[in-house]
Image (cartoon, rainbow, N blue to C red; front, top):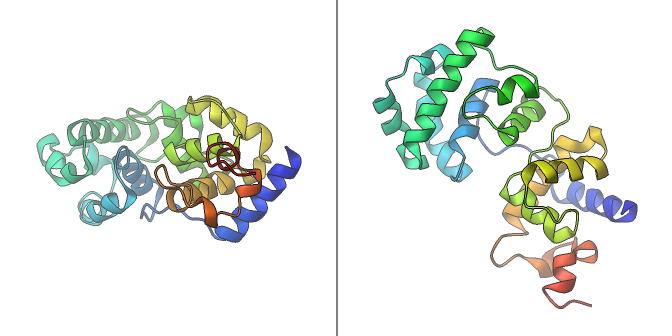
Length: 212
C-alpha cells in the first residue's frame, strides 16, 4: 500500500500541481452556497448562476430573508431548485441565529446547518479554513474504488478509509486531486485509461480492461 500511495501522490502532484475548487467564490459563505447548489449539478452550471446571486445576496441575513419563490427562480437551472432554495434559506437563518451570520469552522457546527452534509462541510473546512478535510463526492468515490483504495459505497466509510492511508496534512490536497482526476481522466463513462499514469496501480485497469 505504501508504494501504491507514493506513486499515487507523485502522479497526482504532476497532473494537478495546484488543485483548486472549481466552484467560483470569494468567501466562505459564497462557497457554502455554491456547494449546496452543486448537488446533482455541474460546477459549470453553478458558476453561471452564482455571479448574479452573489451580487444580490451579500450576507447570510440576505439569504435568510429571501423570498422562496424568487430564490427558486434564480437557481432553477441548477436543478432540484425548490429543495435547494429551502435549504439555503434555512441554512442562512441558522447562520444568523446561531453563528452571528458567519460560517463556522468545525465539522460539528457545519453539519448542524440545514442542508449541509459531511461533503459540503469538508469542502468548506479544507478550502476556506485550511483544515485537513477529505471531500468524498461521486468522482472521489469512483476513483478510490477503481484504484482499490476502498470497496465501500458509503461516503463516510470512504472518507475514513482514505484518512487512514493518506497523510493528514495531505487530506485536502489529495482528495481534491482525486476529484479532478475523476472529472477529467477517470470518467464514469469512457475513462481515459490508455493515457492515465495511474495504470500501474489501478485495479480497474488491470481487471476490467484486461491489462496484464
